[in-house]
Length: 298
Image 1 (cartoon, rainbow, N blue to C red):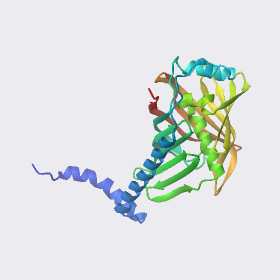
Image 2: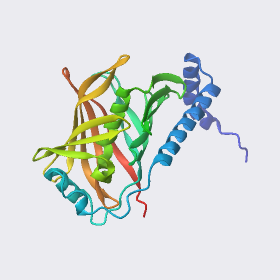
Image 3: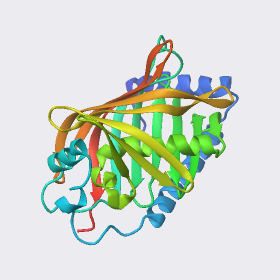
Image 4: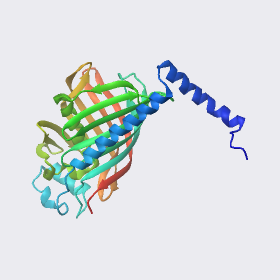
């Protein structure tokens, strides 16, 4: 039997190939440059993940006990009592798979499909977010957002080649990335224990402020708890937001829902994040966690 594809199969392939070829030509790109850019982005991501894992310290000896959170504000204590099972192991690193949507621009802008893998380390705090956002059927944009060993990075490449964003490390970017880490720690909740550097202070019966300091950067977020003692939203009153070539402070909210038990812990499987601007709320990411992997050191 011949290995030559049938005419019908060739016809089905041609529209996609032609569209991609035309797009590359329009952007002044060759297939070779796109493939080279993809390999380069892959190496960058792999290096960041390797550095993140190498800097991660060993998890605390033993398991989580009630004494680890007994003296925390009441809503925080109830949260840990709810989301952690007796004898819960400490998390050293975590790996999550995400599917969702991302919006660029204002509240009238379109949402774009997104797939991402996110790696976390607990001590010292850090993460690498590797996302592909599709601006069209043939327009993948690769985004690498990270905070590794106290150094923030953010880069985005259209077709792995054309720069869309390339932020230099600044104190403002570091604060934004550390705030992101702290808010997202609800996905690997032992990271929120005092043994990992998080300081808690009461706000009211249903909220508490968490403060985390690392590498000279300090951030504080208010965690709000629902009637089931679960975190339903996290608020930053003055988080740095990139505007033009600089940053300005804005209110930010992350909302978390659909808690499920994973490796003995209750974690949210859906979330949405938004900027709360004077002109109105601006949601820009929403999605689900489709896979949780934890290094529990067991």
